[in-house]
Length: 136
Ligand SMILES: [Zn+2]
Ligand SMILES: [Zn+2]
Image (cartoon, rainbow, N blue to C red; front, top):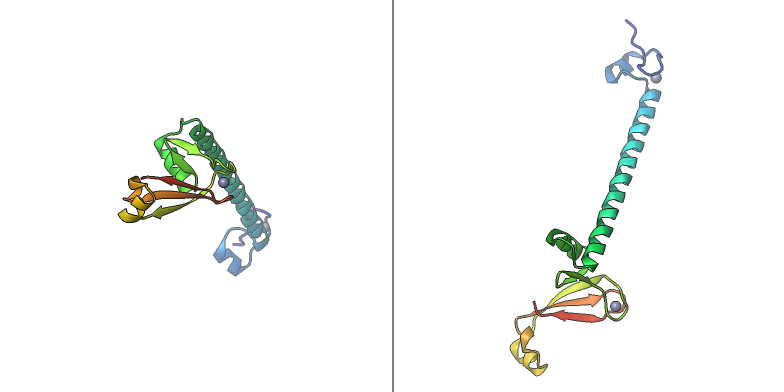
């Protein structure tokens, strides 16, 4: 019994029959289509992700983002304070590097900032390097 390609009807060789029901040419075409479909799906997914990120961002600027959204924004490098997204007051940039600054009591007293004696959350603007401090 001769087996033929399910796509183009060309007879398959014995070894090809062991592999799949399509000839190598049709198989390659099917693989290509599948890869293209996967790529298109990834593109849609990326676009949805992007839209969700923009929504989160806009909501956070208005102080309307959920706790979960705020956490995600923070992990993306944005600065959240008072449940709002904060931009750099100097240059308006919105991404910061986080640094935990520990200060011993004498240094804190020297700078007259006793409230940071337990350490402070320091954010450095990635564009202009302006530093913001949070006693948390
Ligand atoms: Zn074929
Ligand atoms: Zn800045």
